Image (tube, rainbow, N blue to C red):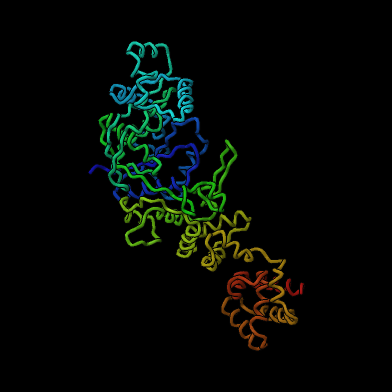
Length: 502
């Protein structure tokens, strides 16, 4: 068997949706499973819809997810260039070749002529289609004589190249995920292969690139399933071996009906893009999983299971485990419903399993945003202490900001519950007792327990005012741990502040 070669080929006409990332992931997993190559190709033939920064966004997404291609615009490779707008000379060679066959013809129809035909069809309650029923009567090389065609070319008349779709042919097709099926080609129009500006359309460039880059398996979204007959026939027209195709199911809205969109994320408050982006051309922007504090490993794991299940239905898998388990034939045919809460669950599970040192770089980014000085020893201790309580690294700050910022105001409801008539005296006694102690967790724990027993006041009367002073609310980890991390001076200062306010 020849070397497995797959490609992820996004178009820079917008920013990469998580459905696109999943397509890249499945290509990557399949290539690695079979010791093959994963290629990144940029399909930018549609220059009119080009979005500045979209190509760089794709590269950044793949790096964040750990899906590094072996060949790309950035890395180069034996089949460069990997950006379609730089492959015009290659396409020109194959345009010339296909025009020598019976599968293509020149179409000189002007936009005005085509618009008139559409209007006439609309008046008759029909939809105009440039197909086998009308092509022999239109302004193209099928109707015109060779001399007339030559004259138009010499006069510089603009023309497109169209594919001549076979009439009344039952075309057998095969898909790794969906199996064998067939389709009547009469229902298809004659697609434009090369536009009047000489630029190939997606269909033509895609097939030429896949052949010349020796792609063995085309793994793409199911929205391209309708293009499969044309693509297979293009391979036939050139006499090329057809790669194997696999069309992935859609990622569906949380309610299960329809394709997941940016609008769904905006409506329900969850990301549908891997990284945040801002479109400079129209001013639109969107949040991303990275900026929402998802770990890349958790994001990738969540995506992998949207449409595929490993043999033992295990949910937490490393990238290496996914590679070993991945099988295109086990990808589901039906769409996968996106569950925002399940996405959070994945992130929580990864945080639980991670060593504090793994989470430290992510949390230090949070601290930098807050202008909090980095103290690695302290930060690691707090991460270890709070990671079980959070779904996201950034929530460590939400749950433990009191470790860095002294509370000067207290939760009103908690104050009413915690502060009693004798609370001021209790705090005063604690301040006196703490001043002579070593501030380690065990010493503090033992002292507080002895204090409660000796005073006979009950834990609530001691621990609640103490917690209010240290945290500003009735929440947080064990008090001796909080005090050890804060240190003697800061702990005593917080007690004195509360003492002065009650």
